Amino acid sequence: MNKKNEVSVIVLEQIASKDIVSLIFDVAPRKVSSRVAKSADHINKAQRLIDVDDEMGFIRLIAAEEELVVAIFEQLKLNATRMPEHSDFIKKYKNHYVKLAFPPVLICLASIFENIFSTGVHLEGFEGLRWTANIVRKNNRVILRISPENSKKSFDLNPLDVQLNRGEDDERVSDAELFLEFSRFIRERAGKSVKEFVTDRADFRNKILYAEDAGFATLYDKLGEVYEKSFVPSYRLLLQVLAVLLTNVPLSKSWGVVEQFISVYRRVLSECKIIQTQDSAQS
Picture: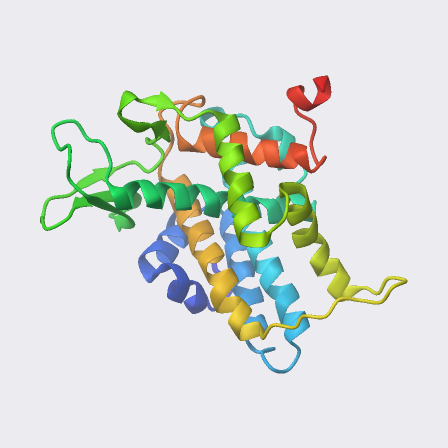
């Protein structure tokens, strides 16, 4: 049995590119790659359930997302000495709330970065230029390639060697500001508070599977539409992040986008009473 457990991962290659997916299986330890392979297995089986049993297909798609989150958790554990502290939420990896809160935070921060690069970034000596940034494979690494408009020149960076700062003064965006941005992001997209959104996202799976006194939930959207609109962007970002973590390390445990992400993610879990932070314990 190979590292992919004989599961077809073509569906993942269609989502995140063959370069990214093949690199993951080339370099990932077994406990990481097995989760990615199982994610592909869930997606393959979900697609066979389209217009047959959309609700069970939806459960498969959720499970695929959760497996990719656990793959990232496993990689963080394997590199604990070089990553920001994460043991408080990693040990709760079986909790659906912990796993299903991860992608929205990731998507929000990715959206912030996308907005920054679409309006231009500050690089000394190249002020005033507009840039685009893409995650690409370069040999056995995944890097961030920054390219100016109307130019063949580009810069390759470790994607973990960046940080969300405030304009050109290099002042770090605070954790509170990032959490507020995430709260706005959720409010605009879902019309809910952070706690309501995470709770509803995690509970919907159970409400489809199990009846309550008042009845049970039904999936009204078509599975194929939900897959393309909601799950594919999440899978793509999770796979890219996993590939980045497998082939790069941050400059510092207390600096950079990984530390910022974990800080916001931890605050989200604290708001939902899933973990207790020092701040929440004092309040």
